[in-house]
Length: 203
Length: 188
Image 1 (tube, rainbow over the protein chains, first blue to last red):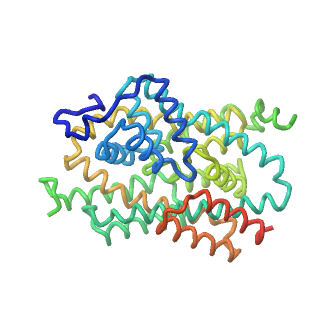
Image 2: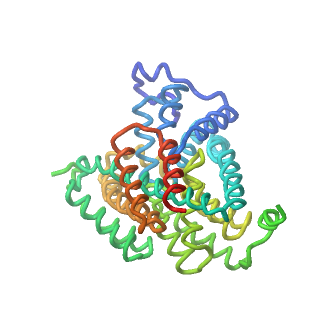
Image 3: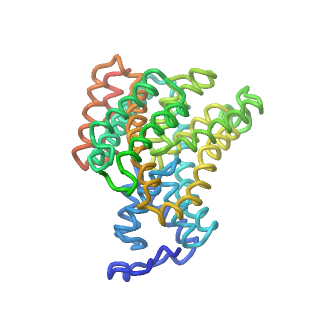
């Protein structure tokens, strides 16, 4: 289970390198996090694949898929899996700490500054405007992910129907998340398994 | 400053039992956060604002807006919520709660999933959860418009941001700056 070159390595893999140690992991993940405004994943691709050459594009995509299926923050999952592959638990902690430590201090500093000035109507209004942008960014992320719906064994209409059902249940009717994920997610998994057929291919 | 220091130490009137309950709830959310922590925002709002009244709708949305405006993973909005509710103890409760279970699971499951990426079980799991992730992201987006829903310039901004972020490579930094500007001009 070595991240560097799995088995029949393509020529591309030969040029890949391995981080020198936990210090470098921490450093690179800190640099990556500090560039990520409104999401770190696009930066992660640029830094890990193009700049550091720790992963091939295919390995990155594979890792991203695994990180996305698993619950929890994708990028933190990804940093932990990567760090663990290279340096075990110490690597997992170094990578995720690099991702979180400095940005956490910055966010807290911003929050304290905001609290200090929050009584000013103009500052509160600016924050509400930024909240509207945050809403737009999240909705756009959903639409971008939705492009993959065609490749899903459920197919586009069924995928969007289940998504709409989730929006209705969680966003409007305010059901607890556990009911929605287990109920609607379970229904989706059953339908997908049925669509895939016993051979694991869409019939 | 004294107020800020008090915030570091104090629990804001929350008891240790409340804190434990908060921690456990975020541990549960961690395992349900398919597609990232932001997908659990609707449930956090239900739990923190509607059920317990530990923070207001505005404080909730502010936490997310500040975390989005700062560099780094969006997960940090969870730290701000904990901070808002019960200072440093709250921050540690929400952050460790949201991170621990999913991280352990990620390390255990990544090896299995990589080796069995083509199996029917793994593919059905991935495919079946994808629509839920989409629906949860849409729910979160809808929820975040709660404080501006009656203001048409802000709602037009939401629509513009959706289109720009979807169709162009414009950095979110510019969009956030535009949001602050539109807010100051139309929402004060």
